[in-house]
Length: 216
Image (tube, rainbow, N blue to C red; front, side):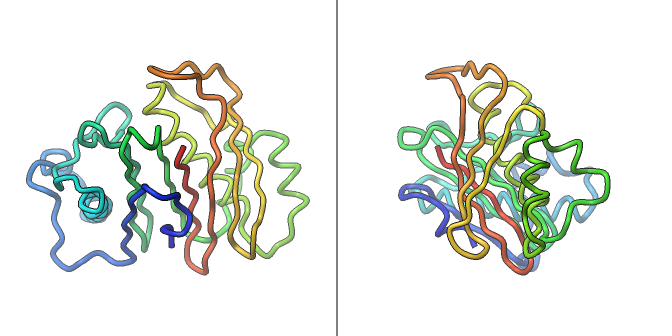
């Protein structure tokens, strides 16, 4: 679902069902020991995908810790992002010398719950949504792209990015596949390197899921 959305040098792995008996890495057990079974399965599946992607990059498949605001902690020199939802887990990783940051989010292919849109969008995005037809759940796609934007932003800045702090526009390349542009609406000072002012990413909608991914 995601490999064809990514540039060369970016590794990915995904699951549509959890392998029987899959357990967290021993080094991760303390992070998840009190969680309910559903959360444990999501956690183990997404991190399993990350270790598969690590091997594709020639990196030893080690435990993945958890940092501030739940940010996954990858080996030195690796940037990465995880996602999970019902029926899907995925990871995207790259060498930091090639890619500055990545962000991925996946969601079930369905409309946003009533009352959510206004809290996750800016007025310009709502105007755009009113102009779209009913073939795709673009409101859920917008939410997905906002989440991917945050996941790409936070490792670079160590700062919160609200839904109202990015304006996202979309283009469709073919039915159910396209690009998006996230324009950051707050100062984008980074921990290192140039300020973060924008991200460009790609998206896909299938019968079951929506995914948005950034590799910048």
